Image (tube, rainbow over all chains, first blue to last red; front, top):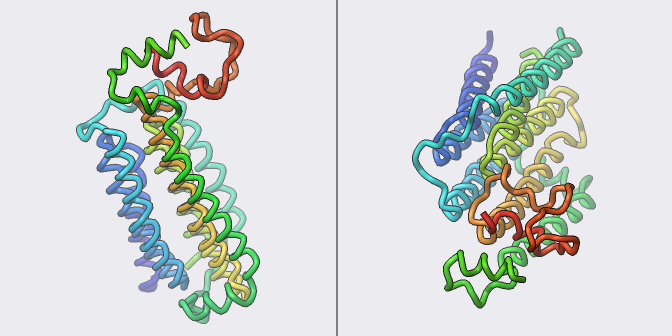
Length: 186
Length: 127
């Protein structure tokens, strides 16, 4: 067993274990922090699979930006930092059944379909920044530009949504019961 | 390494993400499950890019595109989550039923003229 295989197994086990903790821990902030471990392990797997630039983008955007956004959302929505009775047996059982079915279906499909196929990484072209840049700006220019327009649209949409104050800007100072009463009268 | 190792890892991560989306009630935690699923798909793309020796590097490029789309999705989704929190006071996806397709409620404020605004802010505020 080569070094790459051992590293892949270790990173894969770390990713799976921390992903299980992301979906099962009762503490919401801990879930976001375990997500960091999962995403960093996946970045290491990208490095092993000769996708260097994707790995660093994963670290920058996912570990850097997305997790920080999620943590901000948890704090701005005043998520309780203590343990939460979020999951009951009546919710866990059907969800676990569906997840196990999905896992069984996908796993049997990929294992049956690709048994015996070797992933030869010795001569693979490493997707460094130079390679990826040449590829994107020579072969994938149009999707890249469309994607930048989409990112701009999403950004404008997020700004508009967060400036949207429904129409109760004027009675924000009053307690919620009065606003509710006004809502019922309306 | 065998090709099915990364594929199996991606399948299991996807299943864990499905479990997270189904079992969580907090909208932000549901988003974390969606992120897990997107990352599982990215592992598939990168593994097949390395396996097929794609001269266009389609797998890695699409993985990058998916990361960008996921960032856009998270930004937009968190704006919606904060808006829902401001109007409802919670982000419990089980209790957000303002857009459900069902019979109009019997309370006097409901009735037939359910506008988009009252659908957004209606049920959660009259608890």
